[in-house]
Length: 476
Ligand code: ADP
Ligand code: MG
Image (cartoon, rainbow, N blue to C red):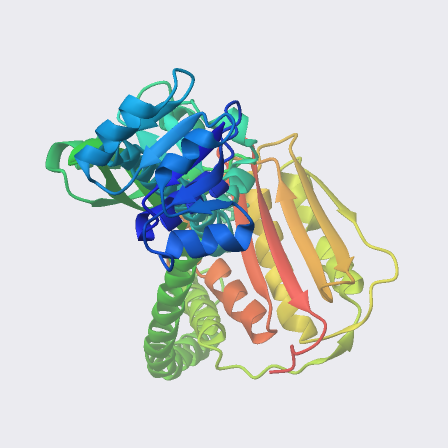
């Protein structure tokens, strides 16, 4: 389409730009001629540069061959009417008011471009934020509890692909439930946001891909579109480690204070106990064996001995006895513990065996104390295992981590989840004649060796105690 422009002011420059800029595909417009009474009108100057037809009188346009469109930009109605009366039928003419359309088209197109660009910038930013920078789990949930979007961190943790998560119910994905969360334990953060319109917080227990419980702190924020709630953004943080650490610290503090207390009490009791014991034995010596008093005195000394044993355990627990470490073979210590506990196992008709790692590197240990630990764990296992059950002591060397692991596994009664937190507490026992000191002492000894002891147990199935001792840095 060949265009001629009448009036070569700034508007004409702008118009030429727009026509250049947009390739209106089918009509492919080109400006071929420009008229203005002023020779230095900017449009005329530009047209001259481009080698277009320029004139001071638009009447010259009618002499040119095929002009398809004359655009009048002077704003003078008389000129427009004059053009209309002179042009031939094939040529169309539009007034400056109609020409405004070009401006509008340009404006709309620019806005469109800007919005597009902003959108892609926002999207890029969103992706970086959600999937790159934020290490927390982020999920966008609709009011129907269906997942709208989810970040890579969360997907990885759940072991799911994006397709496996999006469109599914949030409670299905994180709780393997068929109905939304509710109640005190698992309040639904989404429901709270819907109810209040404000952000909400909750702590949940989620299951990871291995079925392990994870404590998760959830913050939920309303997702608003023009003031209406469309869904929520949930940001959750795994606080399992923090909770475990806190528990461990509490346990530690408790043990330390009980240790101090018991050490004091034990010291005070030790001396009078010794007096009772020796006095009873001295009187006994003067009496005939078999008499009633002789027997009663025997009871006194036996009970006093028993008390001394408890006191000794208490002192052990309070780490009053010094430890002597030297390089030793753990497998040997395990074997000795087996020998010492074999009788009890046989008595209960429990199978006691070992599976020891070959070529275990030697380790700096207080042999007697580690043996005490292993005997404690093995006796506990025997006591918890009904006849016909199995107990296995195994050792393993983890070269990369530079630790030796000893495991005591049984097929016994197991430990109730509520008790799991308490078994290392001094005096916690579920046995009629238990002292509740075995595991507390064991815990202390392993700690003196710079190691850790952990437990997992399934009630009715059995229990595993795992002791990990580092090869280096256990010389404190
Ligand atoms: P005690 O043996 O005197 O009760 P411990 O400190 O050795 O004290 O053990 C504390 C408690 O831990 C026991 O009473 C028992 O309930 C539990 N326990 C320890 N080991 C096991 C095990 N292998 N199986 C089941 N329960 C166990
Ligand atoms: Mg015990």
